[in-house]
Image (cartoon, rainbow, N blue to C red):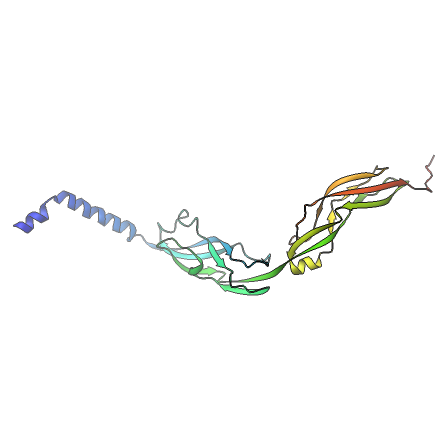
Length: 224
């Protein structure tokens, strides 16, 4: 019969294709569904100009995912990141974000269940810049019989920047400590300046020149 000839024509190829389809179906659909937890980095985007994120912001979050074993491999999830859009942040203060699958670009076949923590509360501060004086630090004084007549640092001020409250509290930048033990004449030093608050950064180059004038004390009488 005609229909029988059509059915049996190239029967071996048709049977092989059917067998391959069955194998592929079992390899994909037949894989057991599993749940895993994955630690993923948090990326913050669209931060408005002039604002800073507080130092207590999290760097990563743990997400719970569902999918087949082949979809939940480390290599398949290696590029996963939680991207938090900050474009709606209007100014300084606190803002709470609820995490969802909209913040994740999940691989096909992977479903988001929850995040731990499920919410992030971020603190935002205005960026502030100002100039502060440079304070010279002395580690060791000149030897007995000598004293510091004058000291000068160039530049005398450096610009700092950071969160407004922390910058307002910062009164100066300080040089690395200078050891004058054994120094009996005017000397110049090239040293770095630093700001003690880790949230405040130097905008100016940190290298400064310190000139210290040392003279012999007038009433000094050396011992026998």
